[in-house]
Image 1 (spheres, rainbow over the protein chains, first blue to last red):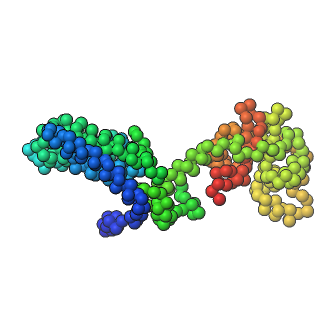
Image 2 (cartoon, rainbow over the protein chains, first blue to last red):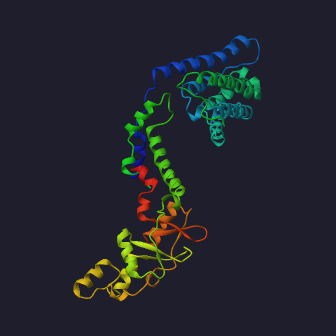
Image 3 (cartoon, each protein chain N blue to C red):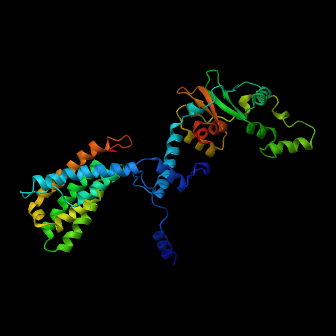
Amino acid sequence: MNMLEEYLNKIKGTTKSPPMVSLSEIGLSWIGAFLGIAAVAYINYNRLAETDLVMIIGSFGASAVLIYGAIKSPLAQPRNLIGGHVFSAVIGVVCYQWLNPNMWLASSVAVATAIAFMHATKTLHPPGGATALIAVIGSEKIHDLGYLYAIVPVGLGALIMLVVAIIVNNIPKSRRYPEFWF
Amino acid sequence: MDIPFDLTISDEDIYAAMKNIPGYLDITTGDFKELYRLTYRHAVKRIAQSVKAADIMTEEVVTAKRGTPLKEVAKVMAEQGVSGVPVIEEDKKVAGVISEKDFLSRMDGKTGKTFMGVVAKCLKGKACVAIPIRAKKAEDIMTSPAITVKEDSTLRDIADLFKERKINRVPVVDVNGCLIGIVSREDIIESPLLRDMS
């Protein structure tokens, strides 16, 4: 009975949500995300359209939240951004190539292993989970890239977004990025 | 070790502080409180280890020599308002320590080593209970060998020593064993660590 009570008490939560950020912070997050995604999206749609390559994947949208919207977070630091994406990409490709056509298993093993690996390498970056999943459930174009997926679009795209973050996040007086490199 | 009452922080304090910091903090007030509690514990430990005997000791020490008559020792202790003095050799090495306890235990062997025991005996008879030690010298009643600490002993170690050996002061000696100061319980209370907290 006590154990159940303790368990249910945990679900109640213990504290309230953090305060809202200032309007300027909202504006700065918008500008950063606009420029970062514009860079990779422009290359993808206007430079690589005729090729087999891609430069943008869905998980970059999630990375933008962190590296332009929550820049102090340990999850948003360069080590996590680059490491989380690249490691997860490799894990995703391995899972697809070894476990397809068993797609449910390839998907779940890819994401779970990506999280475990990011933890173990201190590179936890939530969008990495999406990067691993996209390697499995993505289009034929993604599957055809094979291990190149980890370099282009994942590694190079993350690097471009990082460069934009370093340039843009250090312009306002109220912002500083990164908190740490490694 | 829990955070002292006047250093505890509320969720409202943390919330207000988070508002002061521009940008999104990826942390809840609960996270911060837990971090604060643990950080406080580590800081106290670190500071207790960084404060050394030399930082808190009293350098001007009231001392006695081996041959100092007890009536003089008692007079000096009374005048200077100290409850114990180191007894030093000619070369300033510490031979022993005399505290009020050493006086009391020699003054009244039967009723115990307490101040009230002496008072009780005084009230009962006419003779002064200090008579038996009137002709004695410092070296006759001092506790020897003396417990001493080095100048780089930590506050933590000294506090533990006081507790374990049930003593109230400890002479501080240099590498040659010569007296350079004394740390009393008062010195610990007045130490920078505690002063900054109040």
